[in-house]
Length: 350
Image (cartoon, rainbow, N blue to C red; front, side):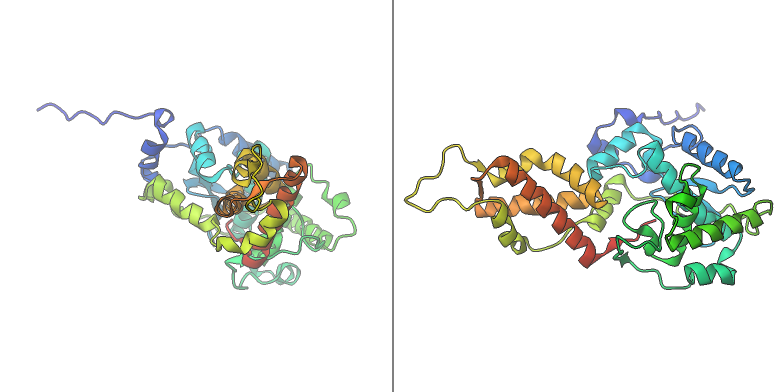
């Protein structure tokens, strides 16, 4: 009896977006070791070797970066392992977290801090608790950082070290591990220097020791994720979306744009609508405000979209100097984005 033919392998690089979104995550046949991302992992391990650390985390593929409690390893998001998936991530979320070599290393160093803490059960050390706080502190869903605080290092942005004592430790470790951070001079005079000095002493103490926890357990590996890419991005977009009534922006929009002239005064023939103006500058707005605020570009774009929709409903026009109008719009977008971050808090995601 002839053997049944094997299913023909498919090349995701050739799939249209709609077809790709219909795939389940578990159907993505990806390999860390064969991906371009392996270069980042190799570099991270050279940094650990340079610091004379014996510890090496283990890695697996999942839907985002994370280090589960008690596990001395980390998950790597699937989208970083294939150019077509990076393109899809940018299409759906407007940016790719960890896309550049430098940003990926910052995240890897951070997650290694978590993994190392689990490997050596550092949360049990009283001095560590006294300096960073207790790991038993409830983990918030959101947080509102103090942007000018010098009690915390700066690695991932958004004041992420302020989210929880565990994040403070991981961020401080990441800065300490970075061979180009110059942390002793960079943080001279900051209260955060005490934390960095403690990390330096602690790492020297455990550098030659074998980890206490050596489990290779994987949490939510890609092979177990049965939902589709479409479902994945629907959930992710909802997570970073903005749900506010449009009319709350009316007074602010009227400071940037103008109402149409009242009859019988004629409407200028060459007047650009606010809707057209926003669409014309949307990409630049999203990029510049995202970089300035440190917020996820998808969220910034949601703020811009609320402006566009409401401006269209009000039939607003650009009747003033376009350059000044653009400056005002950039400022308004940044302020509203930060206001959302302050009131709603930054998502705790890593």
